[in-house]
Amino acid sequence: MTDSYDEQDFKNAVQDLERKRRRPRPLPHASNVIRKLLARKDYIQVGQRQELEAAWLQAAGQELASRTRCGRLVRGTLEVIVGDSSTLMQLTFEKQGLLKKLKQIEATAEIKNLRFSTGVITPS
Image 1 (tube, rainbow, N blue to C red):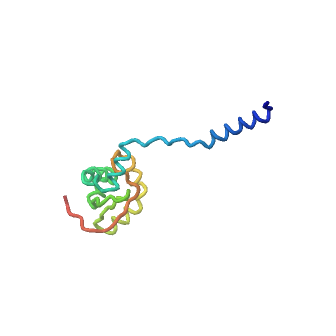
Image 2: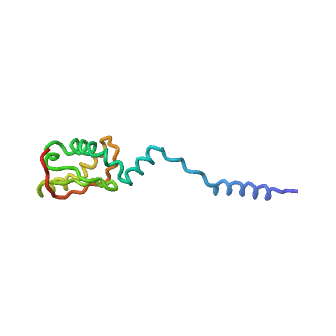
Image 3: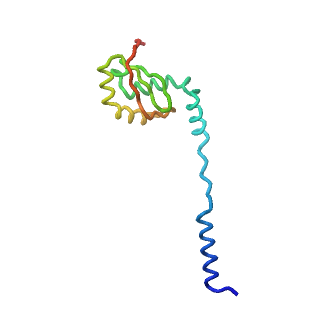
């Protein structure tokens, strides 16, 4: 014989089991996995240079882009080589705006941060 307490205990046990059951996470899309793997292994940077330079030209504008050049992209941080210290200071002030513009541009690389350093800029 079962009474109402046994039935309630059974319902509570079923609810507890459902709550503790592991649910599998949805799998990420294969293209995202491959893109991140290639970016981690630096394979994607070979074909990415022109795309990065075009995105930088669009985000920074012709005037700033003529005084800078794109460097390496390492773990989401784009290194930008700057010809003089006054331009470096200007880019430092405009860093957040440039990051927003770069994120809006549809590029395969995911740029999370910018790093500026002075160096020699060769005219192209």
